[in-house]
Image (cartoon, rainbow, N blue to C red; front, side, top):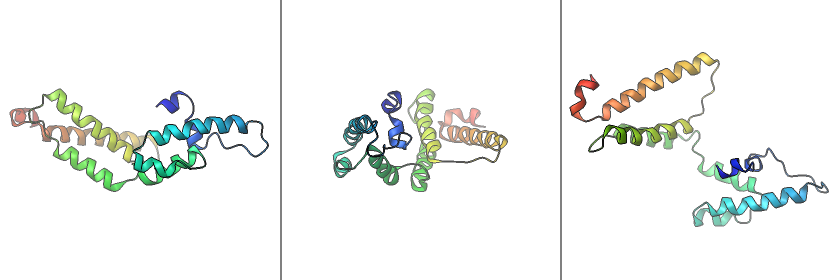
Length: 151
């Protein structure tokens, strides 16, 4: 979030490409990139970040982390999240706390899925199906005193 707020995320995505040798902007670009590399490395656990200290650019660090740890298209991570949602029960929580426990799981599942729609109607239809599934998830985890609501 801090990188986006400071308009530096373009360095990581390659939107602000490394200038060619002799380009007067190269010095500025190199300075900005040099500020980003430690930010990235310091935000990681030591055993993950240490090998990346000598990466040539912040984009190289970003690409390596995306390749190794990206949640997108990660079937095993999606399975784990789906299982966590399935196993999530209200227990001693009030209903609001229970919903607040489910919501981040659903949001993380959304991040793991990259779906390309043929048309806007496909996306709208999918969102309706997903909403119904999430209502079922919610109802399935409610305490038995809510059996009337569940039915």
